[in-house]
Length: 184
Length: 184
Image 1 (cartoon, rainbow over the protein chains, first blue to last red):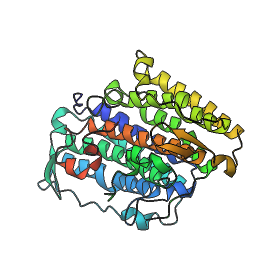
Image 2 (cartoon, rainbow over the protein chains, first blue to last red):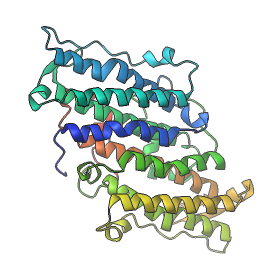
Image 3 (cartoon, one colour):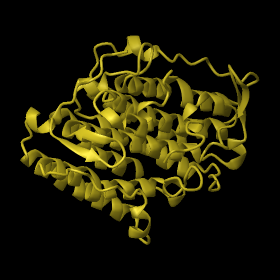
Image 4 (cartoon, rainbow over the protein chains, first blue to last red):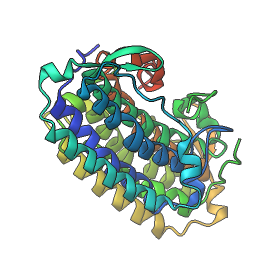
């Protein structure tokens, strides 16, 4: 195994800053048949993923970082609603969601940079409702991984729309059979 | 399951046309520590993936389509070298590979459009060295899925660089544990 990366705020920010553009490039202007397809009941379409990432900007990563940095007596995070976007975005277009995600992400990264986080600040902790104490460093690394996981998901969900079309290639294209029981 | 898409040349081309821009947006200007990391020995880094996609443009999809459309007596495809890029691209920068991939893909899509393929042409067949007779429609659908699989791979390989950094989030982020034995 190549040695994995240590967390580095500049490197993390490089990825976080690229996600909106990557999704815009992948999804902008595509037919709904690509962007609204899912992997099955209760799984996310690419449209849903962008809505879920917007929820993350508004209710997850930065709000949790604020709780940690406030250093209060009970730094417990609010539970996160993975389906908030469903009612929030009914009737929206994907284009408008992509634009909104871009704007929210840019503002959140401006805020993150304005904090000038030191290594000591990155060691501060909060309490996750499911798995307990986590550092700000782990939270920010998880934000990066969460983005990349959802980019991978968008590509996988799109690929699966052609599962019946590739004929004998199916066993040679693992993306078509990954997550047979999808964990959206 | 949502009904999957039937193959449609316009829809397929929409995705094929977006892959270079998506990879450019995701990878352009990133630190090498993101773009050169792998999932382990004999697996692809994001840099390798772009080289592999270039190989596909030069030696796989369009050359195989040409063999089918030539309607010769023995429409057998050349075997595909999955590691051609390793020697070909030693010393190259990722930026130059991304530019080359964009150029090759654009030219190949211009060519594909110039063929004005009819449904009857899409039914023509060639012979794959591993799994035998396939239609042009299946080949072109596989090209789309191949792209998306490698976009998903790039995101997954990048995410794994932070596997040691997210602490207790690991079991909640399937992208970190997908393909424990990677099939690059």
